[in-house]
Amino acid sequence: MKELILILDFGGQYTQLIARRVRECHVYSEVVPWNTPLSDLLARRPRGIILSGGPASVHDEDAPQIPAALYDAGVPILGICYGMQLTALLLGGRVEKAAQREYGRVAVRMKDQQGLLGGLKSVSSCWMSHTWQVTSCPPGFRVIAETDNCPVAAMVHEEKKICCVQFHPEVTHTEDGSMLIRNFLFRFCGCSGDWTMSAFADSAVRQIRKTVGETGTVLLALSGGVDSSVAAALIYRAIGKRLTCVFVDHGLLRKGESDQVCHVFSHLFPVRFIRADAAARFFTDLKDVTDPEEKRHIIGRDFIEVFKAEASALGKMDYFAQGTIYPDVIESGQGANAAVIKSHHNVGGLPKELGFTELIEPLRMLFKDEVRALGETLGLPRELVWRQPFPGPGLAIRIIGAVTPEKAEIVRESDAILREEIAAVGLDRHVNQYFTVLTNLRSVGVMGDERTYDYTVALRAVTTDDFMTADWARLPYDLISRISARIVNEVSHVSRVVLDVTTKPPASIEWE
Ligand code: XMP
Image (tube, rainbow, N blue to C red; front, side, top):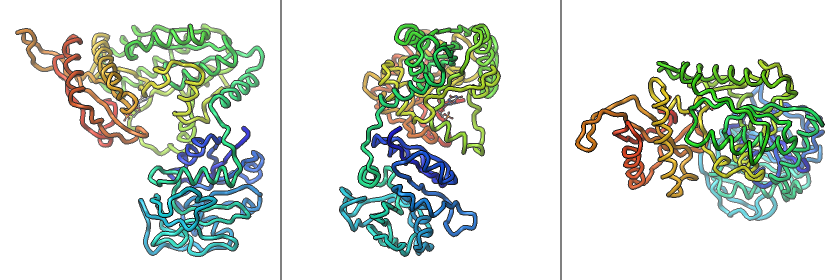
């Protein structure tokens, strides 16, 4: 990687966002722990280093620290919030408790219209979240921004190329934040912004070839989702048919998806493709199971068993490939304390069980939107690349109560209608996730003078940035009306359609 920005993570809630903003400027960036040894940091020859925010106070005894020598290494530095306060303290400035804590959007007066602040409005709305602040700059620094309550909202040491901001340029609430980050990258670090997805694909292909060698073979579990599909396309480009993809079809995918996966990986990217048609087994094992967690466990277990049986029939493979992406990598280091609300269908332990010690994870440094961009660069179909998230246990957790092939058909058909109608009005790129749920509720209706006693289908459509919180999407009434009419007319055994109007929290996105 020619141009690299390292982000030292002090535990701030926006650290990942800093990495994203930098990459949006076509400069590659990585988040590393704050206590990474200085020699390791410098060995990677970063063009610049960004010090993130963090929850600690620089005056705490056990506050994260960095060696002051970092500031003499000749690498441009941008300190954000905690990163600014740490810089001030280490270089001889003063950090004190603010008379008034600033939280939220604050008007910041820019005292400079050049350098770091070039192109920013003279009074700009910025996102603040701090209790402590710099009250006196270290020698050699110049104050370049202030607020009513914060005398040093930004400071810079031009010669040493050290910039610091108390506000958070990485969050979208800071109106000119991206401009400030651009200025740091291009004016201070001398970056040119030459990181593109096709450059990434070329270097990833080289890396895979180097790892796998001339004759090595790779096994990949293809789910049909975006990440594993993009990983497969990339590895195919590197080693062709030495990649074997096993696709476990549990019969609980959306309409048309299973055939599409087969088509893509037999024709467009003709890997050695194995489809395990295991629907009958999954439906048998799920028979009469109504508890959501039990459904998940059965599906997870069956998936692993089917996959293992297919893999051992293939003989020995050298590497196991996974579509792990950057948020998975970061979260697996931090999310240890999160409560288990729903046990996710997880194949994390699979490689070990199969006896693999070597893993290939070519997407582990990419964010989701970058994975999609890479998929498009590699030539995967748009519908596949832009597919919305889909749970590993599939439609089983969208059928309340016992799962049967007939009920799966009802969800599949009603979901297809919902998707078609949403796409027809161009809302598919705006609503982040939408699907139908077969409630276990039957009600009385009348159809062609006959009494009916059929199922109720619920429509669930949400808007969300991160899927941790979500709002219900305000779909137009006439669209809802078309969807409802089509579902009751075209899908057998459905006589009623309702709309889910709950946010997450308290509800979750899926019903189970
Ligand atoms: P919830 O229902 O927890 O869903 O609000 C948040 C997001 O996660 C997806 N989801 C899953 N994804 N395995 C997955 O891979 C699962 O078991 C699973 N359960 C929920 C859900 O579709 C939503 O995007």
